[in-house]
Image (cartoon, rainbow, N blue to C red; front, side, top):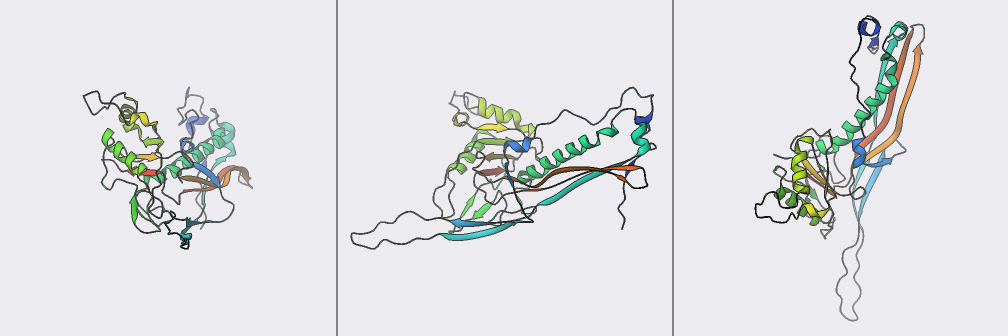
Length: 304
């Protein structure tokens, strides 16, 4: 079945060809900072897929008696996961007449608009790691679980990096989340503490986050109690692509968590003329995916 193509023409955009309009309000803005780069570990892949495995290391040494043989331990092979890149693309077409008669120059900004579309796509896809991090609908980790869940450890047992009942961001709930980081364990259940570096939440929680982290004293206590949360070096970041107004997250520094933006093919911009139709086509395409294997260095709270 032939694809239905929407072509910009003079009949559809009468405002752009008329000299009667002094100003046309266009959906434009200054170049926005790339928010996902604040926390994303940006990597590349060079094939149709990427397989990742898991090896668990040795445990502690064991006490032995004089003259007794030294016991053996061994590595343990864990789970595996395959990551596939996704294809993204968008195009628009314009007639020769529309191109020639445009009095505003907006039509000629097609490549710029495709570039903004690509930027928006990157943000939406990366922040979905957090937005859908409580469910297994969009992706799972190497253990088969959601990013924020009760994780089955290879050596037995579980560890939860989320609040099973969402709670509002507060001094007390942030303390509890920091304790989750301090008590993290490895796949054999031994301590693997992680340092939280960044509190991530939406704009509606900006002032609560600033109040908790920047106050000299405990904002929930009237007795001039020292703010023991705010002096831990924790910073906060406010992205604009979180879908929940109440959810909040803690992340370790880059490299200590596994939230990745994986490039397969950078943005490619192309333009051509449709033979015999006096129509120009502008196209943008790229390949990447956003994924994770390990949950370490992350904590999620769905909020209240």
